[in-house]
Image (tube, rainbow, N blue to C red; front, side):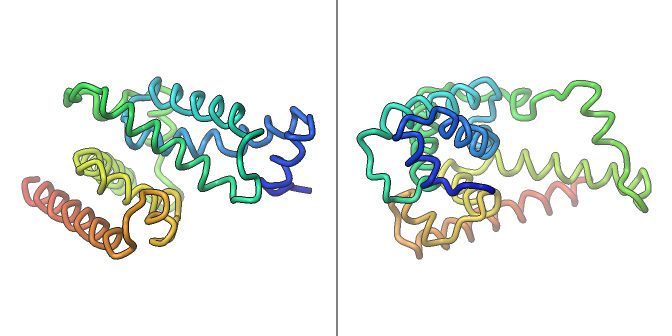
Length: 191
């Protein structure tokens, strides 16, 4: 039986350390992906996730446990990412796409069933181009795009997390998609 976040928080506050470990296991991947998409640095994203869980662990005894856990932990991660971005130097082009080890690259290059090697290569090139285009977006647009499509949050939830009006969420999302479209079409025409 899977416990809700709120039940795990309650158990943790009652002294069950395993409950906090379950929260960490449940959210580590999600928070890492979120941090990595903003920071574009694996080590820094790992640090942000650790920092987030340390903050959560220390703050839980003094927090309102009746509020949903996911938005709270996401907000902590986003704030840590913003702080890191303010301190971060500009990225060199080579740092945009981290190198994968050979085993990962080999597995990723195996075509899906019914897919030709040429189709697999084209899909991989499109994915790389999309990642680069997303990483080149302004911070707020990249953040909103990630929250909407990777975290599957509603416009209302994004507005709450970022403290902006819902119509602004839609405007930023529209601009981000427009920039992505323009960049990808320009890249395709160049090829």
